[in-house]
Length: 253
Picture 1 (cartoon, rainbow, N blue to C red):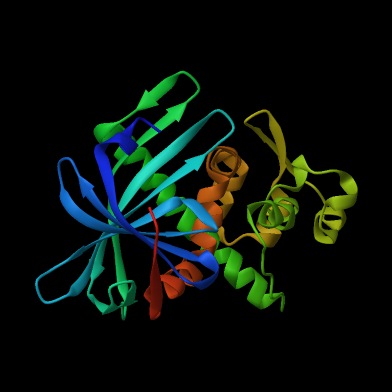
Picture 2: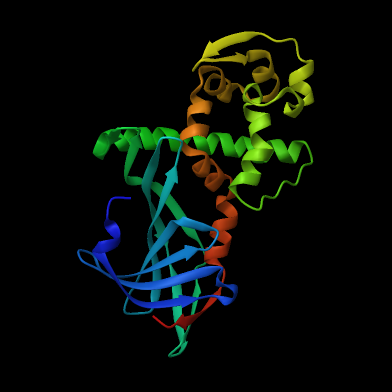
């Protein structure tokens, strides 16, 4: 978002069959040589690794950019773990990472319209948003399990189409609202220029999430960081893809 692409040089590039994953060997102006793993389905998500003398493949961090209606959230998460990177021949690499432990957000920036947040101010906002989003997506997965719904999504648009009527039915047409929204006896509160049905909130959401919906905080997270919510929802699947044994073949520069 702010010119960081010019801080590095691509030395080698590899891809898995079907181009599901890409592996780049990079030389950074300030940080030396590192590996970067990216997923075709997640173009703004990148995982960063170093390789030590024993061919250990060590995760350092992952970075993500989440665009919103009038700005973006950009952050880096610290990672821990240890894997291997094996050279089969001069064109083929295999990576295997038994597990990746996710730490806290270590840096980030936020843009909202003409205003920008960075340093400690951005960190505070991003960490609070992460806490809200992870609590929300934990409930979303439990909601599907409780309702025997094995929802799988082809992308963010499908994810939003499914979840928006459940999370924010007041912003959808009447025919798209859940049956329980239409039948519950409404009680109203206004926040963020929307009248929220607090009876529906109490019926659907656990107690700890109800203030987020009724205060409009959930709406702000949805409008400013829907892709981050989708990322959190799909995180376990993403990590499984990264950590399994993957075979990469060198691609010509």
